[in-house]
Amino acid sequence: DAMVIQNPRYQVTQFGKPVTLSCSQTLNHNVMYWYQQKSSQAPKLLFHYYDKDFNNEADTPDNFQSRRPNTSFCFLDIRSPGLGDAAMYLCATSRENLGGGSDTQYFGPGTRLTVL
Amino acid sequence: GQNIDQPTEMTATEGAIVQINCTYQTSGFNGLFWYQQHAGEAPTFLSYNVLDGLEEKGRFSSFLSRSKGYSYLLLKELQMKDSASYLCAVGAYGGATNKLIFGTGTLLAVQP
Image 1 (tube, each protein chain N blue to C red):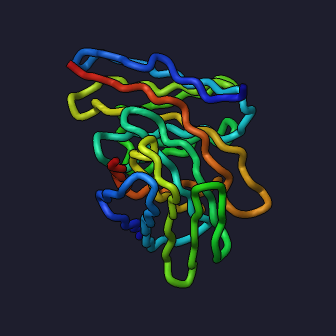
Image 2 (image 1 turned 180 degrees about the vertical axis):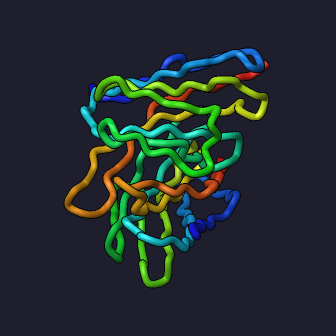
Image 3 (image 1 turned 90 degrees about the vertical axis):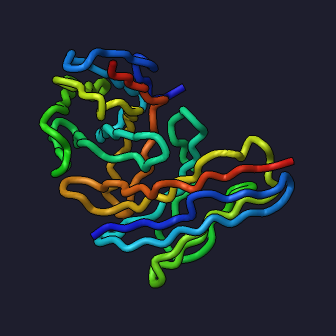
């Protein structure tokens, strides 16, 4: 089945220790997104890739970086995690709808990050 | 600016019907989505409306009025497994592609 996969599902890191979260997709979608979701809050878009073009949200801290080496994979790097970065990190993909309207975003299962 | 409002919590009875409302103010509107999210899991797509009117999909229906900035999700024949958070999300033009702006979600508790 075509899907969005995130690894690991649970990640524990120490304050200030860099961590990388990964996302892969078999949907062959050209757009990939990273969201941060804290408890009882809405998913917050951090950035997205349209093919190889990186689009950062204005309020995303510099501590968060992303890489997309190919169509299938996208990584979220947190350079120096703080306690406030503990959250669920969701990866999503979509096929850009050139005909107008928004195309559906499909989410991976998420990675729950704990910062000690 | 972007603003999406939906009730924080709702309670309903198994077998009943429940309507979850969503109002929005946004620029560059490009469709409205409803997602279901169980605790600790990723959001899953339920419905999409870009034109005014009702979209029906099994037990779930979604309605949109663009002039009023209003949508609702209707769940019929409620089941216990429908207990989840329901996220209203507005598609908006955002640079090179479309982005989703999410509401904070409505936590629905289905009781026996």
